[in-house]
Structures are given as C-alpha cells and as structure tokens.
Amino acid sequence: MTDANAQIQDTVTNNDVVLFMKGTASMPQCGFSSRVAGVLNYMGVQFSDVNVLADDAVRQGIKDFSDWPTIPQLYVKGEFVGGCDIITEMMLSGELDTLFTENGVSYDKDAAEKIREANS
Image (cartoon, rainbow, N blue to C red):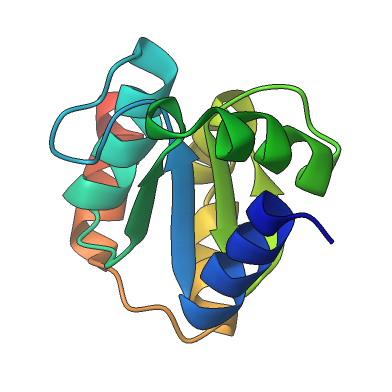
C-alpha cells in the first residue's frame, strides 16, 4: 500500500463524510467541486474536505483508490458514493437524503427540500 493509499484509507475510515475535491469547502477551485461542496454545505452536512490540488500523490491516488477517473469524489462511512453528476442526481431524487439517514449522517431536511423545489 502506498503512502497516498494509506492516507486515503485512513481519511475515509476515520470521517463519516469525506469530499475529495479541487480546493476546499470554503474555497473550491472548480465548478464541479463547488457544486458538491455547496450541496453539502447548504444541507448542513459536517464533512471533511481533502484538497487534491495540494498533493499530486493524493490527486492520482484517489482516482486509483476508487477506480473513478474524476474529482470530486464523495465518501460516506468509508464507501465511495460518486462524483458531481451522481451526487446531483441523488440530491434531486432524494436518494442522498436516504443515504445520509441510513448512515446516521445528520443533515437539514428542509434545506434538501428547498434544493429540490428550486430545481423542479
């Protein structure tokens, strides 16, 4: 196991919700990362953000770890959920709410409904 792989494994194991992204939750560096972080922030989800731009080994390592070619990548309770398009679809369908509820992740249900209403 490489150092980056071990670091990624440790991060996803020790945090309920992790977003590997370009930039940070407060300063995203790409539109896709901004969208996913924005959804999580608006829903009041506590999550750990990992800026892949700060470490090339982690940037490539997360793609290898998940066998998923793009960033951002969301993990909930150690499981890879998906990237921007998947998270957006799950948000709009209500599947993201279900995922959080089933995994004991707290979020603002009213905020989730507002997102769906604004996008319907």
